[in-house]
Image (cartoon, rainbow, N blue to C red; front, top):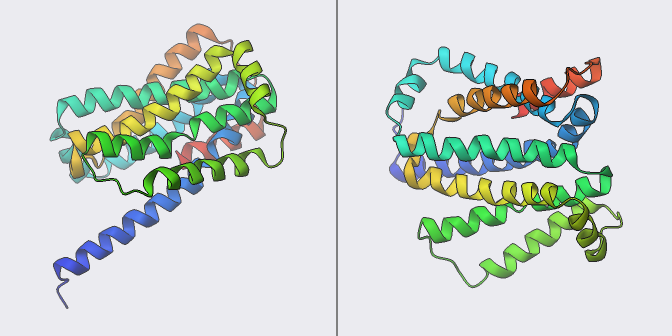
Length: 243
């Protein structure tokens, strides 16, 4: 049985990280549309609470089955658990409220555009907080990526600067929440690396159930009990698993 060299291990880890990144894009790309669909049926807070209950329950089961993950969590820096945990919970809350409270599908598109600033803000905070060197192509490449996100999300829909500013004026809180989501996830990603490094593995197993608890409490206080359908339950199960 051969022994992998350091270079081979580094290459393997890099490939796994890249594959994980592409998979994350595929999963997250479904978030806005499915979250909106669930929100239209049961309400934004109920949608977020239900999805996080599914994902949180899966995370707790996975954590219970792995003593190694539990040991890792006990070694996590406190500032990471509290700081990044708060950012995680607040991001999920802001996202579901922004998507669920948007008026109509056009505003959902615009809210999605603001939320999908997170890849660009992740790069920005990585440069600023992790002191990574940025090449001359970073800015134009990031702008091209944002243009690509815009073209993919709009799909020929009538989203103009005029309609965007008009909608912001009518629903400023919704757009502020979406903008916060786009910025906070980038900050969460960079601070995770800065405060915990590779030790951060497994922390989402406690962030997800914590988010579920917060959203369930808010849901019980602020929303009436919804009427569930098979479609809403199926979409919740899918998005909970994806999350």
